[in-house]
Each structure stands twice: as structure tokens, then as C-alpha cells.
Amino acid sequence: MSLENTINQDIKTAMLAKQEIALRSLRAIKSALLIAKTEKGASDILSAEAEIKVLQKLIKQRKESAEIYQTQNRPDLYQIEIDEALVIEKYLPTQLTHAEIKVYIAQIISDLQITLIKDMGKIMALANKNLAGKADGKAISEVIKTLLN
Image 1 (cartoon, rainbow, N blue to C red):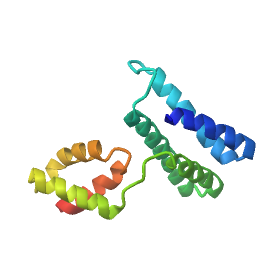
Image 2: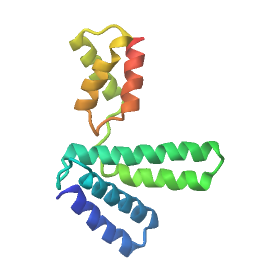
Image 3: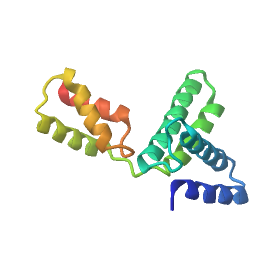
């Protein structure tokens, strides 16, 4: 079953159960997928990678908003953003732990024989390609920096 069909089914379930947070999050996913499908050069059917990118973008937006609300001392709005991010995360593949990311990045560094931080871009490109949806780019970047310093 495609992500879009799953989201549509879950919207119906959330409506019947009157789950406001889940419903709002699912509608945001559905809207983002529709926008991605109608962008210039996009096809009617999104690939799994494109769907993952859409979900990651939505989560990133919510986490950034939550940080802003936290600094502005708005716990009510902060909690809404965090709750929505948690609902959206359920549709991503299982995320790798920090230790798993570290092992993977260490392997890339040894394979490419990189020792300088200036070559971080090469590692990031390969890691982002292979870990798409399984690890956050920010987490990958932090691991690379710690391993090369």
C-alpha cells in the first residue's frame, strides 16, 4: 500500500476517533504529498525517496518551529509542534541510533581514506544518499565532525 493510501486510511480513522493532533498532522502530510506531485517536473506517482524527503521536511519544519516557541516561552505551541512531529515520524523508516550512524560513517571515512574536515562534503553526499530516511542530516553532520576532529 502506498504512503498516500495509508495516509488516507489513517485520516478516516483519526476522524472517527476524533484525534485532533493526528488528523492535523495527517492532513499536513497529505497536502505536502499533493504539492510534491504537482510541482514542475514531478510525476503523478512519487517515489519512496521523494515521499521520505517530504516527511523529513515536515518534521524539520515542526522541530524548528518548536525551538522558536520554546525560546519565546510558548509551551502550548511548542507541544503542538512536537506532537505533530511525533505523528509524522511514524511514517518514516526506523531511524538509526547514534552508534549505528557512527559505525556507518567510520566505514565511509576508512573506505574513502579521508582525514581532513574539508572533505566532509564527500562523506555527507554518500551518507545522505545511503541513509536517506534512516538518519537526519544534522545527526550525520555531527558524527562526521566528531570523527574527523
